[in-house]
Image (cartoon, rainbow, N blue to C red):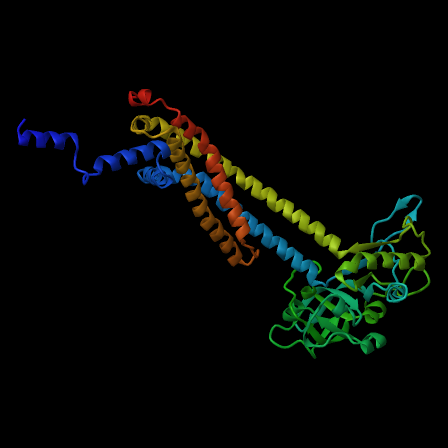
Length: 450
């Protein structure tokens, strides 16, 4: 063998060490066989598939989009309504218990609350006794009725409450102009009146009400104060009411006399507990004092009054509004399930359309797990896209409702995260069946699919 032939033979048998392509390629193939396709590459394949048909992608995600938007908007509106109701209840004062007149048992039949004239001014004095009721901080006896207020050519049919000076403290009322009823005005039963914000605006739209005269049932009353607006309207709102000294309401406006004993009667007695955690104790003390004053059985079987705890009312209203809000949100969430079913159907169609592609990928080395991940990524991308757009749409609806001023909405991150997480869970759940169907395809059968 010549020298040239020997040199060529050595080059064929032993390639130069400086040419490492074969070794690197073998390493990459080994890594691919051991680890399959990476998550990043799988996600890129999934997103590229969805981008190839944007109209179908958007329509598929539409159910999830509507569901998330409905859940976010309804929960925001519901929470806002709940906060509004809570603020209106607590606007009349904190830590309150209201004692109302009732009818005693007669022949085994109990009358309705408010039928009897069983509350008197002396009862209020007894409740204010710190020795007998140490957990009661203040007492506000009240007597109310409706009357027509007239100022010039303006008039207003208004709820008038006979009140004592402590009324403003107990009910957290703030005076915007002038002053509230004083002890001297209560003692002498003066013809003075304090107007709620809405009433003052109705009667005196172009001038200050303080110092003006109004006529109530043909009697002249001087306006000594106007309350600041509490933001509420309708029943129980101080903005739509007026206040006179309790003695004036009893003696001049409504002629209040108790049925027994000739004592001055009151419509209700509102007591304020010393603190929020002593409301139940104050209520129990008030009930005990009232039974002693009315000489009733201590077990409460013959009570001719009722005691209403403000915190119990607040808890009941809050629970009710929460239940209604979650019920509406659950109904809205049904559209998420419908959207998930839509995702599953479209993914199954996609598997059938891409059968040859799946077979080719498996023939080139893609494992079942790689195919499974790709289709799960597609399902998650569909539900995630719909969820994000739904969050924006739902927030926009809530803000639009808030701008109307009818309801104050309350948007929160926990609701947004819950709705988006539920959307992803729906996409994952309904994407499993199509993904498994695609992953289990036989590559030989898939390649021959027409």
